[in-house]
Image 1 (cartoon, rainbow, N blue to C red):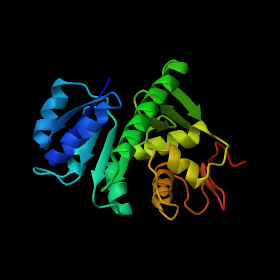
Image 2: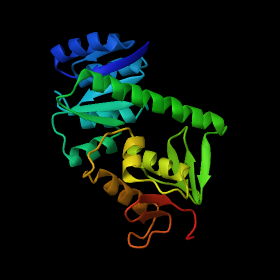
Image 3: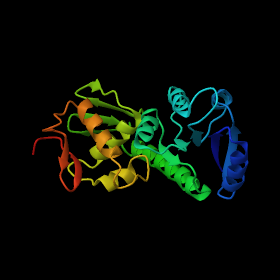
Image 4: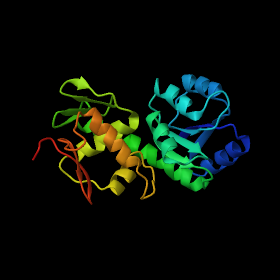
Length: 233
């Protein structure tokens, strides 16, 4: 049975989700306060964390940031605020997925199952390559340490930027549509008009030292999507 930590001050929601999750072999531990949640995380290991943005003591963004300083457990953020800026902030703080309120419990279960599958897939990639590293042009991706380096220098990437670069590098030379990236980076089901992917691509491009107008590595293929190229070919 998988173990999920729910960090939300809504006690009635906590009871509802715990009962519903049990149907899917998911055991729920509920913490109403961030301080209590951090105590639990220091003593116990969880497979995933469901984190509300609006909390007493501190907001969910700060909680996610604190969690990421010590562990890599997948985080799904819940919020009544669903604008693009909040999504980007949540992802940059280390969240793996983002679900606006109100939501159907079944959708949250699907999101949990999705992040758990990606966690297993990431581990499998590392095992297949021995040390968990692979190279795409001048970029070396370490899937075990969740880091990327370029020409020997580690890139300062957020969790989401790393996942985006990893996906593009794994598909070197292949054009990936925005829709494909949306559904394979963090598993977030963004709307077709949402420019979150474009913003993240721009940030990764800048950290690669790419010229925004004439990028060498992370190229835009107009009308199709993005492609990672190791050369100018």
